[in-house]
Length: 620
Image 1 (cartoon, helix red, strand yellow):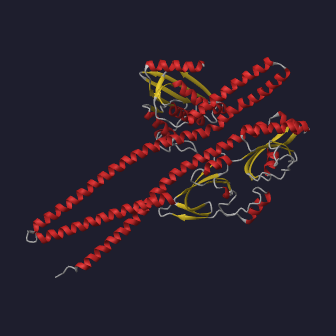
Image 2 (cartoon, one colour):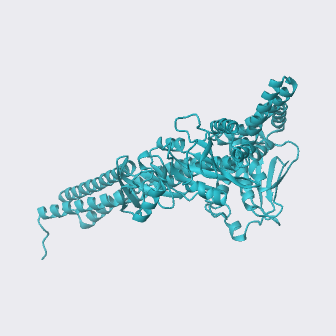
């Protein structure tokens, strides 16, 4: 006959089992928290890294147009062809004003031998005038091939920057090279205000632009001794030792690759997220610190696991105690009654646990829905800022033209005043005023597009939103040689939010521009008409159209025909229109792609009021 073990042995076994359960729950909770937090951090860090890469690219593209324009400047060509003192002095002043107006670090001109004949910093103690830069690769490459870009440490200024160069020539051959140095101090300062360290590296893994000043010119991967000597010999980075960045790879429990940094400026574990900087050979890496978020998440998960384990053990202890008490009190009762009581107690515990689980699931669902709304709004804003970064260079070209014209008319007006020709000077000043108003229109459109959506829906003319989108993309349309036709029946008004509606139109027109790249006689047709209380806006192009496999999943996330696209633009656009009570469809059309927006038309009284208001602003 088997006998039950002593009470002390049973209690020891239960305590050991409870301890084992708590340890297992602790480890499982820590691992699940690590996996969830690192996945969330990676998604947020990747969006932040891509946004920073877009800003850096826009800063570089803004400076790239200067050497192209200056390479055709007649004053610069004449000064290099015949370097007379008077011409060189005037060229110094001109480059100085141009550098101040474009917020460029320095602009300087080199003759055929690589010697600086004029520079925007000719007044400063570190003037480049008279310096010999024939040894610089950017001079040699530009003189040979016509243009070059080279990141290096300034030998005089001791500040790093990207050197953009163009060859100057006339009918007789090369005259010299114009150099524009772009520095990224403002970009780095903006990065430093954020908590995540950011660094960009060239194709050799050497840090170029970074939010941590001490990391300039550090190597993120081992360099061969011969490569180190070659870099030092070229003076690309001056006398810097090119030491390795002190980090070691670290594998997280869920498989994520982390980096452990042991630098004075940053220590601890970081989650690295890298993305290429479009238009350059650089790669941008954002280091998201894991310690604060990961430790807090692990601590919270372990605390919940401990509390749940203790609660379960307490419930089990109470149940066992209750059963023992009931067994003592009802020992004389029938076995069937004891079995029935035990079953009732077990069912009660199960129902209580199920009820608690349902409440927890309901609360979790409410939190998830709130987080989803926030993420959708943030994704829309990020998409708008990404579009803004892409069109910044185009808007810069739009502004550069009237700025250059203003400069020319201002000089002419000064000459007319000196001659006493007041009428001619007045006409020049009137032209300057018109050009200034044009710049104001462009910058107002850009500022309005960058503004974060307020969520307020109000009546507005559909023409206003279409023209706002075309204003932002005007330069790119002209640059690509794309003809745009606009046909609006009447002046229909819709109930919408201008910022978000313009974002949808910019997305659709940008997609059309990219689809028309390389097409013969590219054309975009935009039409709008009101019918049955709804306003339909159609954006169509004569490009290759949408392949059937793309059309089937066109409005699903991450569906794209672009090699560098994320496939979120149409998803975000359809979500925005749904919030505004509208739709976005892509009907099949022969010869190209077509997208149709449908929105509620504003009331007749509202439409008439809005038309009068638009007309008054236009006449003003």
